[in-house]
Image 1 (cartoon, rainbow, N blue to C red):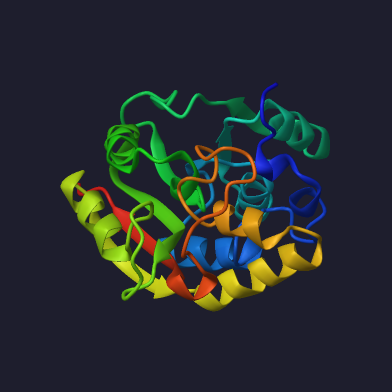
Image 2 (cartoon, rainbow, N blue to C red):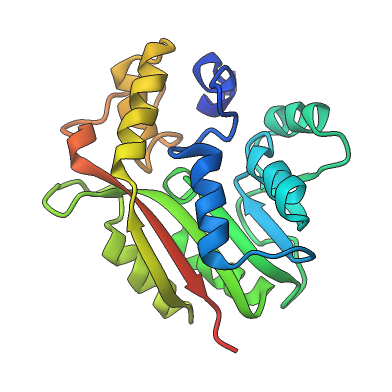
Length: 230
């Protein structure tokens, strides 16, 4: 039997902010402002879930939003909640966009779930136009933490630079991660599942497997904005 995507579980689907990532739409709005997202831009939301961020950006900023996600269930839910929103199933491999066709892309708590950061950054560099913006908000290892399954913020920056991006802005939003974890715990997510969620092995590990030695204090939540050079 196929294992259920943890984002399809009740604690996530009943969150007050349906964006399903730390900081929620408030952080999405801040990132969009810092990134200079404007009306008329074509913006992709990679790992969009039910498309809450895509719908928010389209509604409030007037962008042409396109959401991609692995989960057919979440896409179907998103299309029901936001008829007409463009949400597509994605196999987490090549992006279904022509070269230089995107003005911006958002990856909100996506990298730690799907892995393959270097290849995804290369795909994003291909799909973004010169001067295009990439917004990442992501769970990372704290500076002194030891764990092999998750990148540190500096490692993500290195991979972005290797793919040809210039990092223009960085912020620490770890408090948003703590609030997010507390909200999920209140909604019935056990600590083992929560620990598994907050690392890159959350979908690769067997059901019920706990994440040895990884605690919330070992993690940080980073906002990174990068630009594809002209």
